[in-house]
Structures are given as structure tokens and as C-alpha cells.
Length: 381
Image 1 (tube, one colour):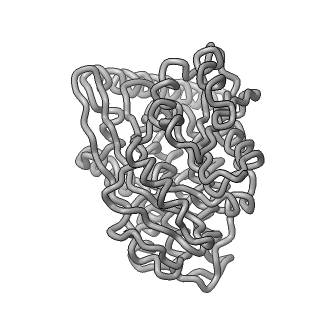
Image 2: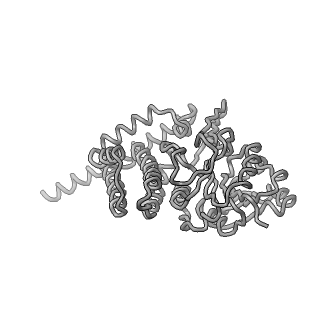
Image 3: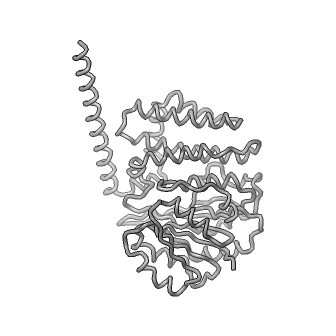
């Protein structure tokens, strides 16, 4: 029998948080769901911790273990094996609002057959040792089923994330496999689904389903991890550019451009904080990204928006100035992602120490290059 919703929980060394995640789903009351626990090669005793759930709910909780391949490989596995109408993704260190999940299941059961994606509000939970702060994120001001071409109810300035989206399994069956062993592949999943979706449903604005925890530590969205995994951003950026734009569909084109633009924002944010390369190398990388994007737009015969063209030209022709503006903006804007790395004094010290070490390494490399250049000049003379 086909269930209404499959909740995919990707796990890697999640023994400390997995019970809190499963408790938030309330599997006992919500019988119309499947929970896929995908163990991505964990080195802890994850299966031992969830054994009670596997014993009590064998028809609803399913445990799978596979070799490590990161988030994308887990989603590929879930799409191939799920048997439900909708699919959502829940990180093993985050939770669902239990009451909102029950209400959402009622809405999904009565959703129209043509519904391709469902958007629901979510919350950021900023947690440190002394305090906790909740930041709600509103996706839309309506709860109607809207055709894709009537996409105006979703703000063009809203960042569409995996936390706000629930996918029709039929849509996910048509997407290209996500890249394995790469971080941040959720950007590719969202992008491909948006390109294929025709009808989108918005859930009531009073429901906040996903509770996204920003904790102290080495999370993948932190500047430290982003700098270390910079080549993963390059792979994801190339994956986005390989996806075809939808010709003649202006609304869909705007969504496509926005997805790539938001990824450019992350690239800019990393480059302005990267002291392992000198400024000229970073400027060359930024110019290269802009050229790739413009080539993709031209090949798909897409018109350029005035503001967007101004920003891309600014980054293309004056990359130093663009990086300076981005650095100032990051210092001023009090967003959730800024707080993820600068939320406590201890975390600030770690970030400053990391940047200091990078600056020291860059100075050392510069001294070595100058020393080698002087040696070459001496040999020439």
C-alpha cells in the first residue's frame, strides 16, 4: 500500500541526536508515513540506538546501511526505493514540529493529484551553551495550489532550501542522479525539481514544520568548512550550469537564475574569506565563474535582467571592488548564516584563529614565491 509521505533521514555518526529526531516525527501516531534511516557508513552504534524503533514499527521505520557517499548518494538511494506519494528530507541533527507534521499530513492526503511540490514554513534555531534563539522563515502569504506560471506568491528574494520543500516522488524520479561524495548537493536537488515542477502548493502560513538547528561546531555551512570544501562548491556550480534553462518560460527562468545567483553569493562569501590564495587568484576565479554563467545564459537564449546584469558586470570587470563590497555587507548583515559562525565568543575566537592561520600560510607562500623569483633573476644575470 502506498504511503503519503516518506521522510528520509541521512545519518553519519548521528548517535547523539537521532533519537531526538525520531521522537519529533511521532511515528506511533503518524501511521501514513515511511521513515528511511540511511546509514552512510557511520562509525558509531547507530543501529543499536534505533533498534527499539525498528522492532516496534517494522512497517514504518526502515534502516539501510551503505558505504559512505555523502548526502547525494543517500537521496539517490531513497528515490529509487521509496513507495509514497511525497518525499521530504530531514537531517539527523534537526527535528520536525510534531503538531505541524500531523496537520501537514492531512493537507498532503487531500492535495490535488497534479501537485508537484509543496512549500512549508520553517524555523532556524540558533543554539549555544548559554541561550537559544528562534528565527521563523515565511515562504508565502497563501496556502493555495498555484500553477507554476502564477509563481508570484513566492517572493523572488526568498531562498528556496531543502528545509522548505516537500517533493512529489514522480518529480524526483525524473531528475538526474545527484553527485556523490560532494557536499551541498541539496542545491542541485532543489534546482532540478524547480525546473520540472508545474504545480506548486503552499501550506498554511501558521505551520512551521522544519526546525533547522544552527549549533556551535563544525557544521557544513560554516565559513571554516566552506573554505576547506571549496572544490565541492565548484562541482555544484558546474552541475547547476549543466542543467538546461526553460526557454520561453519567464517565471521559470527567473527561478533558474536566482538559484545560480544564490550559489554565486556563497562563492563570493567564501572567496572574500579565503586567505590561502592571494587577491589576484581569487579575482581570476570569480571572473571565470561569471564567464561560465554568461556563456550558459547566451547558449540558452535567455534575456538578462537589468539589476542582475549590473551585478554580474560589477563582479566581472571590478572583482576587487565586488569582494570589498561583499566583505562590508557580510560584516553588516545580521543573518542566520552569519550567526552560525559568529554566534558566541568561543566560536569567534576559533574563526579568528582559522583566518590568522590562513593569512600566515599565505604570507609564507608569498615569501617563498618572491625568494624563488629573486633566485631566478640572479641565475639569469
